[in-house]
Length: 68
Image 1 (cartoon, rainbow, N blue to C red):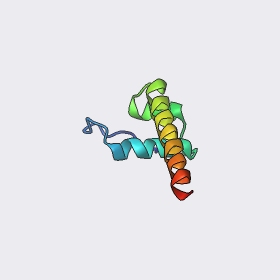
Image 2: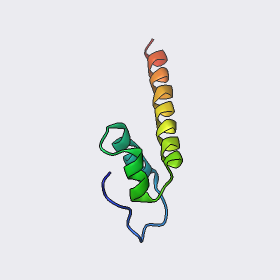
Image 3: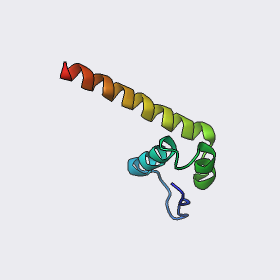
């Protein structure tokens, strides 16, 4: 996500957070770049990425048990 956050935007939507995390996971941007673009700390961003990865692991586990 290479676009800086618009000054008029005051809150993060789930869609915006998801797009940020996907861009980091896919290697389109880095934690440092996202932090600079959106004025967030690296720990905030890393927390979001970690939460997303844990969520994906949980969804994958449910998918496997449901298919069995």
